[in-house]
Image 1 (cartoon, rainbow, N blue to C red):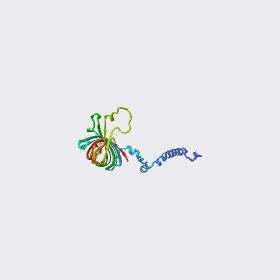
Image 2: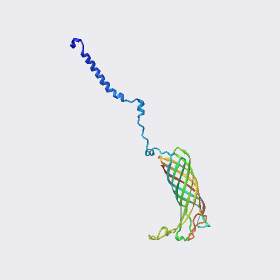
Image 3: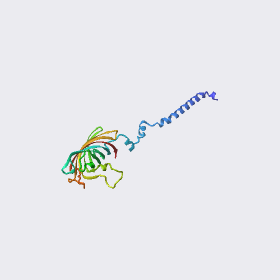
Image 4: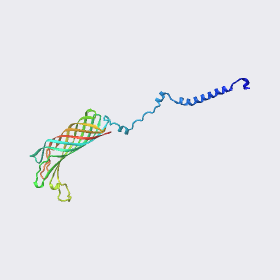
Length: 268
């Protein structure tokens, strides 16, 4: 009957098969095409980079404009060219003293201002004659100890270099220790109660001004130098021991302090 109607079913079957293949192909491509977001949408949904943590910020280059602490130590020479040292009597004096010192300081810096405190320990280098029988081989050792507050203003910066001016104020303790050969080199190892030497202590105040500079390297380390002029004011009447020894200093003492420091920066 199909042949009698003159209909070619093979052609319809071929067209149907081609249509089915085209439909399958379109279905396989359509999901990917529909799920693909526009360029603008991709930019909007792009995840943001995570913020740096405090530890990651510390690992980056140190920012000196932020508040930070400075821990530093170093050495210095203390010169007292006009000081009158009179350990034997008021009328028997020598002029001038030089001491080698060790410094430890801690400061906090905010913007261009720094403030903190530090200590200085120094040993007198000039030998001074003392009274007594020559056979005793008496010697005098002078030691200096300072505790000072410090203020700085950083007035110039160039790259890793900085320069500052500042002031200090605090207390000074001067210890005159008189010893004999037997004190320094005991005849026996027997330990006796009490000190092996005679010490006179002189306390007073200290004020000064100074300038300095520092160079930052390896991000957090600094190497610097300073020069300072200070006035030490101690009692004008010298202390005297029962043996007739006098404290070396009295009155006002002019001190020049020059040294170098090595420090480390730490964020606050």
